[in-house]
Length: 283
Image (cartoon, rainbow, N blue to C red; front, side, top):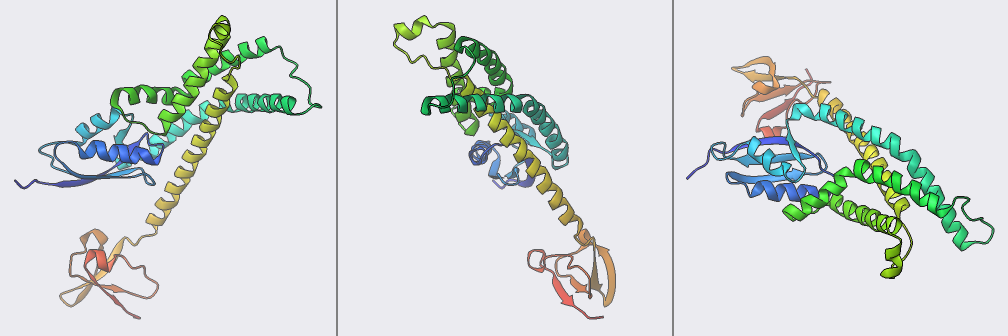
């Protein structure tokens, strides 16, 4: 049976690492009616060949949404990126000052343990742990929500990515520290280390949020640069038909057309991929 194959491209929302592209590719490739699928992580774009009688973009989006991704139309990408960077920016505004403060406190504690001239922190450890517990609770369940959610998706669908690893690491540090802080009797009963790692959870998620913000900013700038380059493309072409030179839109160029490229003009099409003939002229 010959399928009425259709090729389409979609932008992917929610990709964070190279493994995401492999996960989405495998997931969509298994959908009945899909002939081939490929996800480019650099462009966050899906190219898929499918039979519209057997599946649809809505079905594909439904399948990948279970893993935390979404298919977007090409026209919706810019708005989605702006919304995403606004959300990350609000998280960064809250978490970054706290991250810097706790990072400095961590370095102070390290310096105190390694040298004799750095004094001990002028904060009672019980007070420090209380503040760190409250702050890390907000950080882990707000800033770190996408990463903790990735753990449950991993348990349900057996698919892991970078978010899963971040979630496991930070949530483990938070839960262990909470156990030691809230139930100190357990440390002596089970002979557990009395150290808490609230500051590690805060600093790790804060720095990851900073990296995410910088990544989104660079992607937006890259997309803007690409849009400018696309804007430099020629919009029309001069072709020879029936012995006459006529100027037409690039979309109207046909296979086998003879295209004239005059001095100072842009080459409107790729002669190899479009299977047209280019003739340079000095007239």
